[in-house]
Image (tube, rainbow over all chains, first blue to last red):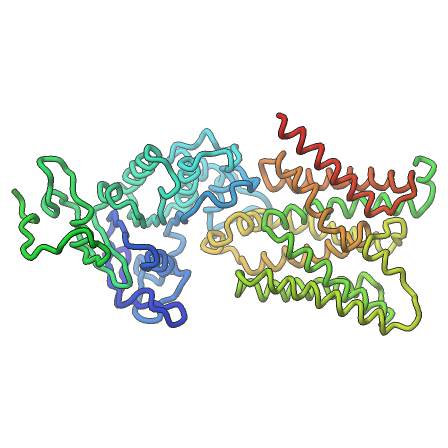
Length: 262
Length: 266
């Protein structure tokens, strides 16, 4: 069964068409990278999957239900976790925001909720920072806390919007290694600009720019032209393959010889 | 100062200072973390329309001011939840129109029957027993709300989009915070006046924010700091025969300056 099934979806703000006739199927334990230019509709696509926005045309089902009904099974890590860093809030309190529904005590937080939040923090390696003020953390640490918050509800799908946009290179790699570990049990959707990094980890890629083109990239050596024996591939090739029009640095090849395996 | 305590008006002033300071500390914290300071200013000035109306109709001032302030809060909530990016325009509009309505109603009232200066700059030395009941009831309500809904208010204030995704009714809590702000502004008008009320809602909060690592501690620390400023200001006001509201604000501002110097030096 596919975890997310999007059929013929179109969405427009006022009269401006943002997404047109999108089709996408995400299978269980996929690691899907969503790439594309700014304003191409990536964030809109996420908001549709999360049920924040409703499509004008087409249907979206998440875990076999409508998006708003399966919200409890989706973990979401929003973009820009650097806003509101002055806010007086402890790491553990941020994580506990991830709890949803269920029994709750008359005031404050239940013991089980605290334990659960500590477990989520341990999963991302931040358990020693539970009582730290959120503003005192680095960008990478804060992003881990946001992932822990999303994990708090034990989601089956984890959606991350530009998870490394404000983090240094080493921090980025650590975040992706963490996401890769989580991918062993959870389906992952990541929106990113950082094509080369994300494609090292993803097994599927979708390019969103009003339309959506989709490709299985799990076998990189077969899919891409490789330089020597390295598992290295060219971003431009991928953009071409996914039908991007934004790549103007290279001529489209008439015969895709380079896609053949040596 | 000690001998002044035997006067009933002074006892009332101290009690009012304590009640209003705690309400202002708690609600001021919510206003600051939600970045609604300008909004609270708008509500404060709009309530002048209610004061004017109450004077004209011969109703209790608190009633008229509360009515207008809550009305303004609901209007702003309704407008800004739809068009958040136009929020500052709406607030500016409501701010001016509320004041204008107040001025017109006072003009229409025959005779010169109220000291309007006392609403602009506060009249903590003229707090009545009914005023104290009103203040006490509001502080109790605020305490009740922030105790039982702390986690929801925290979630909405910190990250409203995420709170919405987790099933928190963002619209409800946003409106609730605005209504409580409106009512707090109304009781704070009695202490420092509507022109100075913003300083009372923000200066203690600003200091407390630097010293707190949770919203809860920030709220109560703000309340304690505000109480300290109010009582010190009141003492200055009594000893040197100065306007009480202005004295409280000057004490707060000087303390803030000293705090910033000391805090930076650390």
